[in-house]
Length: 272
Image (cartoon, rainbow, N blue to C red):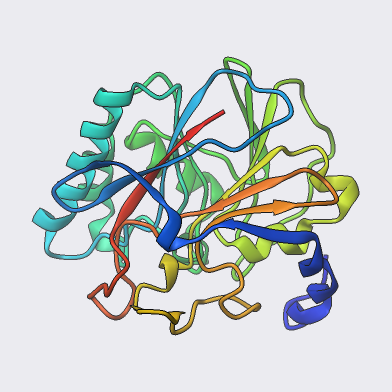
């Protein structure tokens, strides 16, 4: 791990990654009131016959009806496709005053297993401890994984800390099962991504970039919140040295600009 402020030290690792799909080549499986469901089926060398519903970056704000409909979409997708695991990728609210109503909505999401990782909006609130965040997410019936493993029915999810506000470090051990690296920010995957580490993870799931949120025809995103520009803006990537697939979702909510242009709110269904 590099200290904060030296984020460009790992640019040599970018050559290992190849983009497989982008925003134009996404597969829309279903449409909800506020979002779409995008389908991924990576070509793993070995499968475990499981489905994961992944959504991220809700950024719940004061106009609760909008975000209630977003959660309603997640509930609809869950009931229609019956995933084995629901994974939330961080950045639940834009203000702590909305935590209670956001958690009340989250706990309505059905599913046999629900897990979450912390985003930069969670970790930027230094007065809230990791233990307190676990308690908050438990109110929404989600297990927060923060530098620890979540094991369920042949799946092993390692939740990395946020690179912008926390201290992500690789795990000390690797349990049996289909291992997934869940990291809010794709920069975390690059930062942790020595080949000897990534080879243990067939799949990494990330959010944070919002797909750029504002995309232009024939150009793509104007910018993303990443140390590597728009290289990891959206879609599925493959590490040719470790065999790791990385999927980056456009997320559900909004950042400072409360509009999306040619970049719809989305969740992702990943078939293993």
